[in-house]
Length: 332
Ligand SMILES: Cc1cc2nc3c(=O)[nH]c(=O)nc-3n(C[C@H](O)[C@H](O)[C@H](O)COP(=O)(O)OP(=O)(O)OC[C@H]3O[C@@H](n4cnc5c(N)ncnc54)[C@H](O)[C@@H]3O)c2cc1C
Image (cartoon, rainbow, N blue to C red; front, top):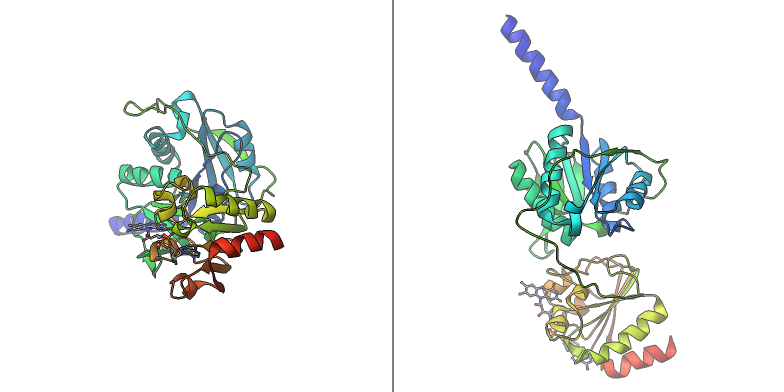
């Protein structure tokens, strides 16, 4: 009798524990500003229905942790600051997140599906012995998520039975949380020796640009192999400067050395969904469409009327880009 009573007690305690969701969002930043992907991950976290904590880690996190504390829906910010986190290496961020998880027992751990999130979260999942869930585009419930597969050609709804859900979030599908909160409590994350013994951050080369970043831009002008050379991209940069747009590219244009590879849009590049996407001299291969077909309006300029890009474009111009683009540049 007693045994039955105590086991039902334990079961109901476990059930109510399971019902209480709490989510950790691992923030991404450059010491000055919080990445927009983090604000989108907070929006996804809010849909899970529990408390949202943001972990800000880095060498200098003051301004960024303040920004994280103001994000709408954030209940707490944990900060970890130190030289060990130079370059935000996955090898040093992971043991910190695992130590944080040991202390707070979150039900969900989220980050943006950026190069940072993609490097760190699967490593955390392996350490926690759960299966990571990549690049979600929707939250149906605390254990059921939507993501795309086969280069965006099928939508998969998956239910996770893991005790902790480790998830990367596709930023274009979640409006970034507004900076409207009253300021969440800021506390210290667990301390420890998190310096990586195996890797070291040496240096970075960032592409300098005054144009908006690709993933945040409302307008993107993209060039493909049809541009023929890197010099010809000047036409696109001129147009982008007039329109306040970002410039992107196909993988063929990147592989040919016309532009650096952080401009690549597609399955193996960036996923974007601006208001307006202009594809110039791009055929519309499935791997390119995977990165841009959720754009609100798509315009294509291509001299080949059979190019697959015309199947997804709202407006298409069958023309030689070397005539059409200078003409647009003159008129706009
Ligand atoms: C595993 C894998 C991952 C990949 N990931 C990506 C990815 O992330 N992003 C990506 O983009 N690709 C990716 N690719 C490559 C993809 O398959 C295509 O090869 C690539 O997108 C083609 O780029 P493109 O359209 O610029 O070149 P092309 O297919 O060569 O098309 C060039 C287009 O320009 C047009 N054109 C030429 N001259 C002119 C002119 N004067 N005026 C007007 N139009 C002109 C042509 O008619 C043609 O349609 C991937 C491939 C693989 C196998």
